Image (cartoon, rainbow, N blue to C red):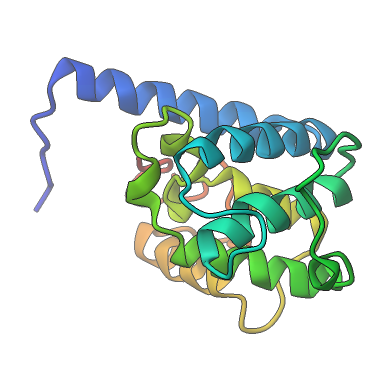
Length: 181
């Protein structure tokens, strides 16, 4: 049974814009992806009710983890309240990956939906997420990595024959379709 969605033209246009942006971000070098991640985190902080050292996923992701990830991917310019958590700065790359993915999974994304950049930044992992692209550039997924496990399950359902733990454009093209938005 095929699923047919009757979408409005503006919905189709938004999906096309998000898809094009995800593909563009996937193709960026780590350094330019770092700049995008940091710039977008700064934009999203306008909608965040939390400060740089508050103990909630939103604050940790946008003030500490994304700036640290951006730093490790090559970004050099930071604001005074970014990257000030010594615990985050001392994390191994594997631990940073784990913490970024945990925060991404638990952040209150609906608080940011008024920002156009939120639709890409918090994009479904199985359809290409730039934060996950960043941690993939930093370090390969390890055992127990929830994003890699989730992607493996989706790849299996989409009929991908050769899945290697990371999202790539069209990895489900062999079966039920590639990029799903």
